[in-house]
Length: 185
Length: 280
Image (spheres, each protein chain N blue to C red):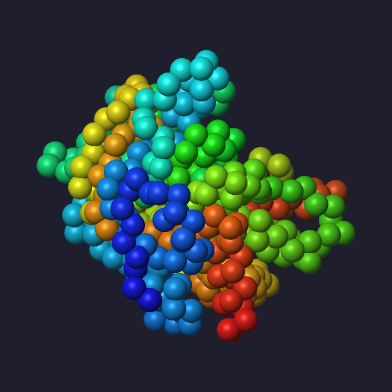
């Protein structure tokens, strides 16, 4: 099966057409954010303020990269474990966040929001951070520079390899993949 | 009495922090390559292939294998006939970490306080464990520990009646609960015995042993083999997408314990199981 090319921002129509297990190559802008940045984003929302990024149809990559060496766009940049963002994700999905890239399980709350608003959860290969860095063509600081690796950055990715883990119907590759393998073994 | 300078310890640790983060130890790297050949499930094979590519890129281009370059665990086996001169031993270690993480372009992942959560900016302090041993050498192990897997680790104080079955079930249950979160294929360190604090250290130390070296006691080496087989029958697979290769290795370390207790700790590590050892 060949990888489907997906360009960001991702429309609801495209997001809802993806199915758990699909392998994709992501192209375009994705924003980085992990624990500390999510806490600040939700704090802004609590105060009724605007977010520093256009969240509609956007994709957030849960990553805290290593510092770039001279001449590099970015250092190593693999996904971090997503459940730590579960407390914040539904608020962003409700505002139009379309895709999340990370690794590991999500809470039922997040999955319910994804189903309700038509969002998709992609998995990148955890621990393949040097390989993934090769697919990041541009990196620009957006805000929260004081957070160091946890700052929000705007990445432009080219053929970033990802797998749909949870789709907008709630199908979950972590359950399907293991079941299918065991059936075959 | 042999003298070792604090400066030479700093220098050594600086270099070891960088090496540990760029080069996967041979035992782990070879195991991933061999699992890639034997993994029956195609998506899992594909993932393992990408992990091998990542190992090669990190080595050739001197890049960190993983963006989580870890909380730096430093184990010192300090000979009782060694005299550290020219500075404080702990500070010499922290300074080595500081220099290694700055010069090696490694991520600074340490917050100064667990609740206030302000980044220290230089990946210090390291977590230092010192054992005083006979002799006049200092053996240093640097093991950067990622927290995706650290967070999936567990400890339980069993009653002695739980026995071998209780221990085995707890290990399997821990891997099952972790599922895809710790970046499988994982390496599993199991501590059995000692006290509440010691058993966690045993599990951590189990992760320092090469995964191709079994426990010297046949009873425990058989248990290592059996548990690894059971873990790899769970079907979690690389990244949790299904497959045979859920764990690359499982090491057990034990310690005498109290008549009333059976402490067990399971420390999970990811496929980027990093440790470098050197003698001064």
